Image (cartoon, rainbow, N blue to C red; front, side):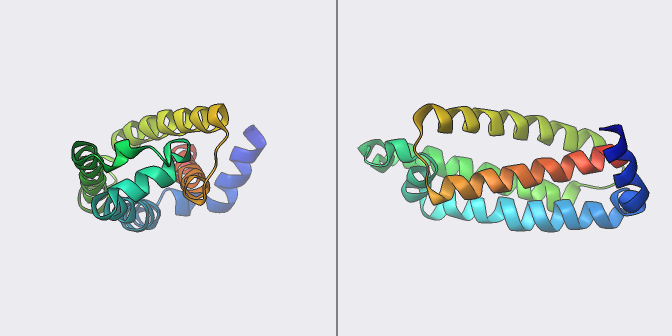
Length: 148
């Protein structure tokens, strides 16, 4: 692990410590390309999105209930808030605290989703995309913390 860290820092250290990495990795990638599309999916197609991310309950009429749709859309609204924080608030001064907080939430989310998936063994294309996205945003944050 130490050799991996040394190799990463030797090759990419200045970039991982730069404002440009903060901008590209978090403002552009996580804010604009991850959180905003997720927000749109939850706001515009709440039932479909929920069914795609929880295929065990694909036939459950619960996702069509108006109250549940509102709750799913509220989750989409929180995704917009998170995207807004990445886009407008994140800077070199607050990055460490902000990214540690978001990383903790991402890890809990990832582990819970991982447990849920393997407990129920129903997989959908949305779940595969979700795993890939969660893995990439966690690795992106870990690279930032390794370098700083």
